Image (cartoon, rainbow, N blue to C red):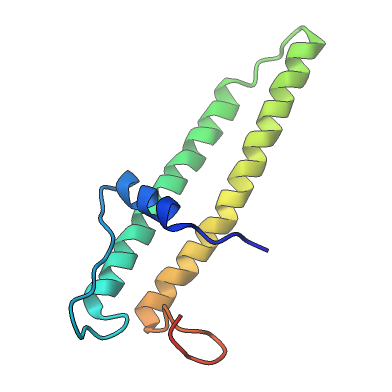
Length: 120
């Protein structure tokens, strides 16, 4: 089961993108336009970061795929590449979830339970 981000982790993600937590105004409607724009901006920044990291991984794998003579060095390099590819695969899945969230923002269903329609 996926682990939820703690408030501290969410805060550091915001800080990473130079953003502050969203503070709704008194009597502001749930998932108001400003709040949705906040989430859209955060998700787009996160998506962009993941895409850049994926490009860097491809470049890294192309440039660092030396044919090392020592079998131990080669095994270490292959292990590192495998770890990096697994990480990128998880991030690819995360990118898909981000894209789905952006679609939900556009459709007006972001922040609501898919089954009951209740606020999350």
